[in-house]
Length: 403
Image 1 (cartoon, rainbow, N blue to C red):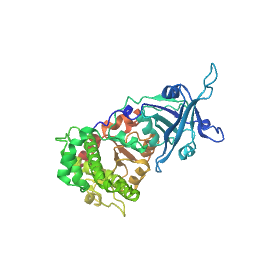
Image 2: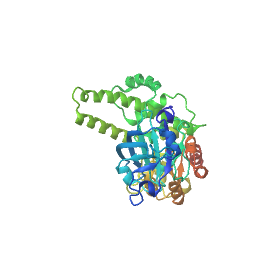
Image 3: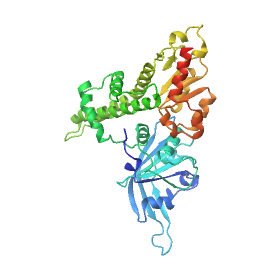
């Protein structure tokens, strides 16, 4: 499902790699960015005071930091007859305090005149994803560059990145047509994850699991994400209604929203595992899911079975272990310790634009990343040469199974 173009969320954007003069108190106490040409093209020639601004700082091994404040665009030489000196002033905030020289900065403005300033720690997947989302590339330019916000259509993967920087992605109006079917099937509460996954896939019609497993898996993921959002909004409208009367019950709203957040957090990984099980079942691939190998180690999938894994006489060359994570961050290292008999392990993800630092470390540690083919373009050309797609993985496991 298409959630629209990036320019439906932002009127324009610029990006730069932070220099010490931008943020370091030892280098500058001005709390200002120089108003170079790309910034002037974004804000224009007139002074703009007190623009509401959301600041975000992203890294891979910690929760995002958010702060709110204001920015002001002005010409410091407004009264000079021939010269201009534009600057963008920002207030002190937690995100600026966390940012370091070399980090990526993206500044975007909405049609309502609200500003987003997002920072991403250098070398992280968060940085890679912002570069992909805003079409910035790998440049380390410390001057502002325009970001082409009209170039990208928002799919489910891009929607997750937008939400990581505090932008709520709207549900396409066409998706409302699914609500009646969801209510008829599940009533007014969420079912078990496997039941929701199965129903979501059933709305897609015939899938080509044999010829196009990559496209089919992505289609399943995107459809379930969409239906989940539609049904969640319906449930939220009901659950929040009692607390939104003439007197706002803040505690009630917080309870509902916290419960919603936990549900979102817990379902994504389970849904992905369900979709992978459908893929393997459709292709007749034998596997065991969520079974213990050694001690408390429990890989997501063992091929051809956990019984074969525990059989000392079964050839190691025919065993395959697969971890499954919708997003990986630092958690990819968990897969390394989940099956002692298998030296080269596999990890499948739906995460776009994983950083080169991570994929290099994975290759060094004998972990093969598996990514659906439609997500390949979010990775660098060098990474794409090393990645394995879903069809390649299935055919490898099928070959070992036949052997």
